[in-house]
Image: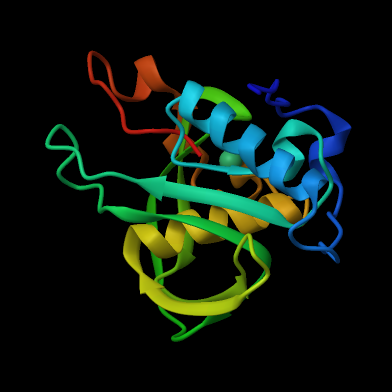
Length: 177
Ligand code: NI
């Protein structure tokens, strides 16, 4: 079912979400289905459970390569539950981000360039991956949602935060997260 995505200003987006304790439950399966439906409906690159008002540590993300956005790297379709992020170097990298909870805007956000994420898939199997670049950026953006952090809170240069049409006149932009 397509769910409403909460927008910045809704106090539920500032809360810290709770770990999932039961896998393979009808509730978790339904949540994941709703998240997939909602993300697909909005052509999103990622979605975190609190964005649809569920305070659980569940995120999904995935980006197909698109010739229109050659700078955006492909990211595999991923379900990541109870995630832990570990930076693998002190190097940071800035890049543009958008968010389904902050629609129509973009900001220039510093993130760890390289990291390991670990967590559980939807069947409760633990896995980990070492990623960098855009994949690492998407993972950090989504996991931030679980701690009540939206990307504007990470921006340092507010001359690089604004409305899509003003920042990128006439351009089509890649997906929001
Ligand atoms: Ni977001």
